[in-house]
Image (cartoon, rainbow, N blue to C red; front, side, top):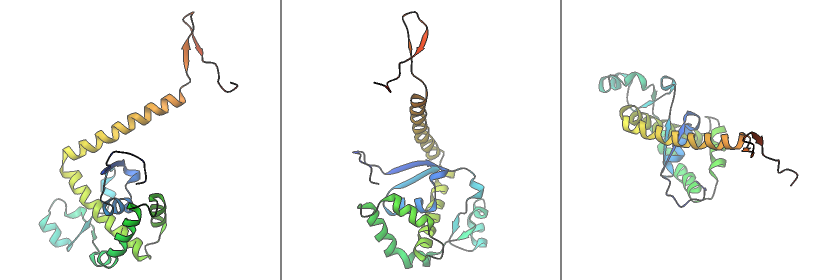
Length: 181
C-alpha cells in the first residue's frame, strides 16, 4: 500500500518473517493476498470451528494440527471497526507501517487487536490449507521469492564488491576514488 506503481498488486509473497497475524488479517481486509513461504509448520497454531472430536472425525490427518477454537463472536462484534480500519489503510488515511506497528504492539486485552489477530489466525489457517494441499501453489510462491532474492543478491553484490577495471598492461587495478571529485 502506498507504493507508486502502475502494476495492479493483488498478492505479496514473503518468507516467515513477514507472516504475522496482523499482516494476514490486514492483507485480507484490503482485498489482497499474503502468500508467505512458512517454516516450522509444526509450531503454527491453526484454528478450528468445532470440537476437537468432531474435527478429528472430519479431518483425520489434519485434526491434530487444528489446535485453537476460532472466536467467531469476537470477529462479529468488531467487524465494522475492522472494515473501517481497512478502509483507512486502503484509501490512504493511515499508512500501513503505522497500522501494523500500532496493532502489533497492542496487547491481547485490546478487543480490536484481539479481533484483528483472530482474523489473521483464520486467514493463516486458510493459507496453510492451500499451501499444504497444492504443490503448484507452493512452487509459485517459491518462484516469486527466489526471483526477489536473486535481485537482492545481485544488488548487494554490486553495492559491496569493489569496482575493478583492467589496465592496458592486462593487470587488475582499483578504479580511482570519486570522493575527491
